[in-house]
Image (tube, rainbow, N blue to C red; front, top):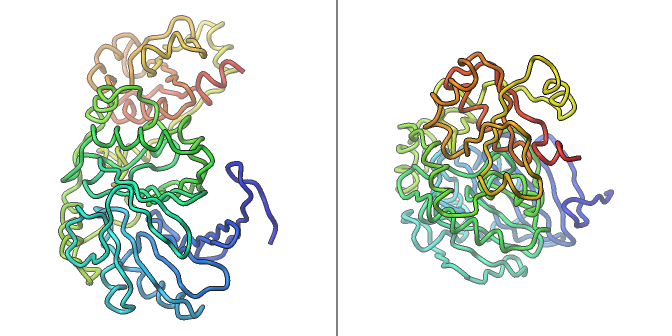
Length: 382
């Protein structure tokens, strides 16, 4: 198997029809599911014992086929939190394999029989793993910190996916900000393995997420809470049914209806009118410079925080500044500045992630001439 560098460490990557395989020294991690819900099988080369993280009930048969086919022994199943977009397969796996079912001590699932607390030192197949209690998306959210990996559940997704929403029962934006601040203090080289990805991204380093993920850009708790309140659009009713099924340790996949691969756990996953499906156009820094020197000058909407405008990346002259957390409340102001909802607007931020979110919000609101500065101010300054 060939080696390649990922996130500053030596790893190997192998694709197959059913999963992507990542390896670190003797430990390996198989990403099992082919869709948005990520389940990970962790094991050690040459040994039978394995651990399964965030299993999905509808795939339990496939998990068992894999485990039995490779003569493995399921030691533990772990749910990083109480899921709202799928029924967990952990209870069913515990029934048929007699494995331990691990969750945080605040988890409401009655069948979890291995409860952990913040700071718990978990011996995972002989590997030292620290459990972090990271509430926000749910009260019982945890992250699992391996020496070179971090399984973040819905506490942190990848890049512009942000993180799990905080408007479900038990969610709290302020607690989520505090949890993300804890992740800010962890080593940059950790590879991030989230419980969901809706756009086919592969795990990248926590260092990258600190710079590219909009959930990790807010300097204060107040800014972060305002940002999420502006995007808090209400959980779908079916998600509450899924939560109830998981509280009750359901073993029947039909216990709650779940739409296939809905991005519902993302912070903006239930935007009306399918805003996540809105095509967002981008514009390069070179093309924008040409436009600014022509008679087709667009309105430059900078959605960063005010302190960033005078930071090392500076700002483009003539911007209209509306921080992302205030955008939803200031749409009439923007419509007037742009000369109507058909006016040309270029959304700008540090790297492009927040600008992309802004373009989605504007697209839902009926603005039709919006583009995103590709690479944000980082690209502009290159």
